[in-house]
Length: 141
Image (cartoon, rainbow, N blue to C red; front, top):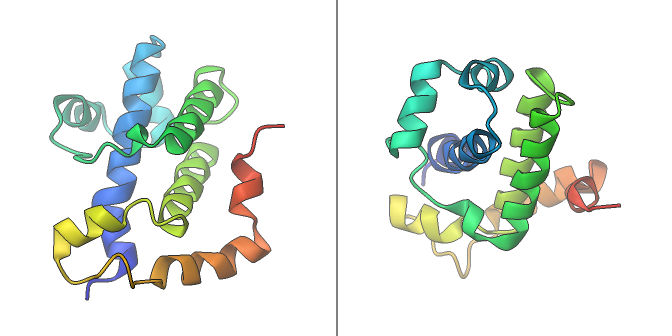
């Protein structure tokens, strides 16, 4: 079985970044600013927009979409950029794994997990979320 971290880096994080980039562009945020804040090249933004990266629509999950909107708003307002934006995307990536929102994608990508019986991500990220509550981090005041 491939590492859950390898899977997340290859499938989950790029898909979340794609959705985030599209939301930022819809807010008329400049591509150069997006590239700076997400620490990616402008050509990588083009690849995301063309659908060459981030092949899974995790933003179709309403809870994830709401969190992406929140992150996009923070970036568009200049509240987070660079390292802070990285942390936001990383926490959302962990949250998606913790909630098992990517299990179907993992199965389709590798065929080496059974989503109904696998509990690796909730176990790993439950321990993390006990120390750094992921549910509370993304809840609206």
